[in-house]
Image 1 (cartoon, helix red, strand yellow):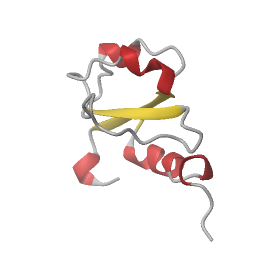
Image 2: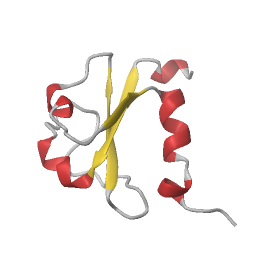
Image 3: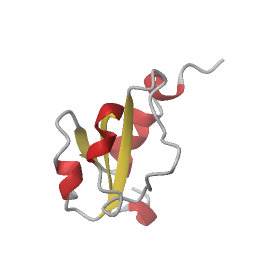
Length: 85
Protein backbone atom coordinates (compact mmCIF):
# COMPACT_ATOMS: atom_id res chain seq x y z
CA UNK A 1 0.00 0.00 0.00
CA UNK A 2 1.26 3.47 -0.81
CA UNK A 3 1.94 5.17 2.52
CA UNK A 4 0.63 8.48 1.20
CA UNK A 5 -2.83 6.96 0.76
CA UNK A 6 -2.85 4.54 3.70
CA UNK A 7 -5.87 6.24 5.29
CA UNK A 8 -7.70 7.12 2.07
CA UNK A 9 -10.93 5.32 1.17
CA UNK A 10 -13.03 5.22 -2.02
CA UNK A 11 -16.70 4.49 -2.64
CA UNK A 12 -18.09 3.60 -6.08
CA UNK A 13 -21.70 4.49 -6.85
CA UNK A 14 -24.09 5.47 -9.67
CA UNK A 15 -23.76 8.98 -11.10
CA UNK A 16 -27.50 9.34 -10.47
CA UNK A 17 -26.74 9.52 -6.72
CA UNK A 18 -24.23 12.40 -6.92
CA UNK A 19 -26.88 14.74 -5.51
CA UNK A 20 -26.60 12.90 -2.16
CA UNK A 21 -22.95 13.84 -1.63
CA UNK A 22 -22.06 16.58 0.85
CA UNK A 23 -18.97 17.98 -0.88
CA UNK A 24 -17.58 19.20 2.44
CA UNK A 25 -17.22 15.56 3.55
CA UNK A 26 -15.17 14.24 0.62
CA UNK A 27 -11.94 15.22 -1.15
CA UNK A 28 -13.58 16.11 -4.46
CA UNK A 29 -15.58 19.27 -4.95
CA UNK A 30 -18.89 19.72 -6.68
CA UNK A 31 -17.40 21.54 -9.67
CA UNK A 32 -14.75 18.96 -10.53
CA UNK A 33 -15.03 16.86 -13.63
CA UNK A 34 -15.74 13.36 -12.34
CA UNK A 35 -14.03 10.20 -13.43
CA UNK A 36 -16.67 7.73 -14.58
CA UNK A 37 -16.93 4.35 -16.18
CA UNK A 38 -16.87 4.49 -19.97
CA UNK A 39 -20.66 4.29 -20.07
CA UNK A 40 -20.88 7.35 -17.82
CA UNK A 41 -23.07 5.54 -15.29
CA UNK A 42 -20.69 5.01 -12.36
CA UNK A 43 -18.30 7.27 -10.45
CA UNK A 44 -16.55 7.44 -7.07
CA UNK A 45 -15.63 9.76 -4.23
CA UNK A 46 -12.76 9.53 -1.77
CA UNK A 47 -12.04 10.69 1.76
CA UNK A 48 -9.35 10.29 4.37
CA UNK A 49 -9.92 8.19 7.47
CA UNK A 50 -11.68 4.98 8.39
CA UNK A 51 -15.10 6.54 9.02
CA UNK A 52 -17.45 6.71 6.04
CA UNK A 53 -18.91 10.22 5.71
CA UNK A 54 -22.64 10.38 6.44
CA UNK A 55 -23.53 11.54 2.94
CA UNK A 56 -21.58 8.62 1.48
CA UNK A 57 -23.39 6.28 3.88
CA UNK A 58 -26.68 7.52 2.39
CA UNK A 59 -25.84 6.05 -1.04
CA UNK A 60 -28.14 3.13 -1.78
CA UNK A 61 -26.24 1.43 -4.60
CA UNK A 62 -22.64 1.81 -3.51
CA UNK A 63 -19.63 -0.50 -3.56
CA UNK A 64 -16.91 -0.15 -0.95
CA UNK A 65 -15.32 1.43 0.90
CA UNK A 66 -12.08 0.41 -0.78
CA UNK A 67 -8.43 0.99 0.09
CA UNK A 68 -5.90 2.11 -2.54
CA UNK A 69 -4.85 -1.49 -3.16
CA UNK A 70 -8.47 -2.51 -3.69
CA UNK A 71 -9.60 0.43 -5.85
CA UNK A 72 -6.70 0.52 -8.32
CA UNK A 73 -7.52 -2.76 -10.10
CA UNK A 74 -11.16 -1.70 -10.33
CA UNK A 75 -10.59 1.74 -11.83
CA UNK A 76 -7.89 0.31 -14.10
CA UNK A 77 -10.29 -2.25 -15.56
CA UNK A 78 -11.87 -2.31 -19.01
CA UNK A 79 -15.09 -0.77 -17.64
CA UNK A 80 -13.19 2.32 -16.55
CA UNK A 81 -10.45 2.76 -19.16
CA UNK A 82 -11.38 0.50 -22.08
CA UNK A 83 -9.03 -1.77 -23.90
CA UNK A 84 -5.53 -0.79 -24.82
CA UNK A 85 -4.14 -1.46 -28.31
